[in-house]
Image (cartoon, helix red, strand yellow):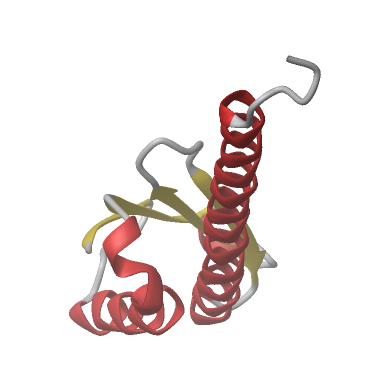
Length: 124
């Protein structure tokens, strides 16, 4: 899984990068083969003024599906990363399950229509 991390208005430390990679690894590892890429944007909205202004924006790129986009704003950047990663993992799981279930129902519908076509007509 390719993870691109960008920080706006502050420098990205190796500790912060490691935390992001660990949290996304935990949240998305079971679906790793379905994920093309993960984009993470971190920002400090208010700058030095403080407040609940640390933003973590995660975009998960899935093949043949719309991207999963999650954003969380907290006072603590680590808390924003943790919540956003957890939400991203749950959302990706739901989206992949829906795609799989749609595929199964489509396959069943096709099989039913094929058997109706190939069964002999009783009236002939």
